[in-house]
Image (cartoon, rainbow, N blue to C red; front, side, top):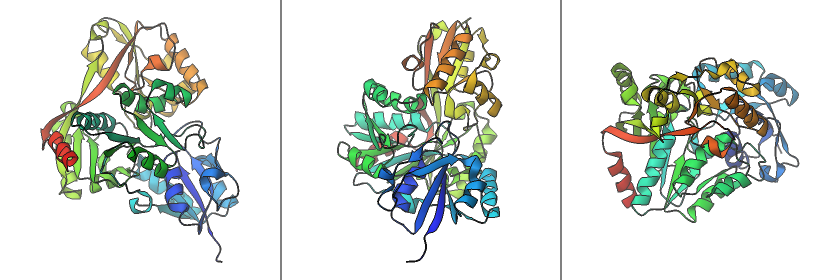
Length: 440
């Protein structure tokens, strides 16, 4: 037998595990010695369990911080480093490749043919060019349309397995009790909670072959709700990619968002009402150059506020979706827009009294303005978020987290919820397109 290639998978608790399950288990000549983890806090103090790794592994696979990459390449005599996470600027990708090659190893990017699963049901996949482009509001809108037309969508979410990987092999969430029983983080709840409020179950986890087959048993159509700007793990029959009108040029400068743009059947340019005309034109020019056959349409995210009259003339603390603000690079979101629109007296800057890992997040991501990212990847971090909120002495919290802060923290400060709803503004009717797809 020829010797096996020694491999390391660089990831962020998402496609790294999926790539392992779909590619590496089928190609035992590539032996994974370790994973690295980044982007998400507290996910590197774990192992990938042997029970998920399969018969070619006689022990758990260790997970290390990505900062140790050169040391790990040397320690394990690595031949190949596979990059398996998303929303990376091209400079970052190539700096990482250069680092890997300077240590003597090869740098690899797997393509969709190597990891996409095939469903026995029709598949609609929603992806994006950047984190925070607005794909989840669009996916929820599609789900509601399918239900209205008598279809049963099997909604599968890009992975966020931040706990015990064996226990998170295949998860189905249908009630609030399911979220509690699975000890979901705020970040997981942000993605799952809106579907539960719609009365729709959602599937996620680690083993997406098992997750897909489970969802197929109760669904007419599989609906993929992507994470970051990552690929769909399931081969789509209709691929919709969301571009962000407020971040022109990002559609051709972030990995793997450009790949999604090039592959898309439909490209939705979102947030056009708040964008400059020349920025929209720039995105359209890039689409025409890279994917001239795609259907192109424009849309907005309508801000919906519960009890907006409470905002006027009050000092407010705005809490926004964490990933969108952090590695998504956005400085504000729906909550800040609502504060301005409904004439808050003051938007309180939380940087002066943030504590612990919340304060460190402001140092690490200085682009964030006077808003608070909803960080809750651990019990300790959730407690630090609560402490920061209480220290604000705000009259009101504007909660723009899809999870709903009242579900995850305790505070004496009243809360007003804000959410986004998808609304098409121009182009071929996406509603008609989805309806025709569902009819077929």
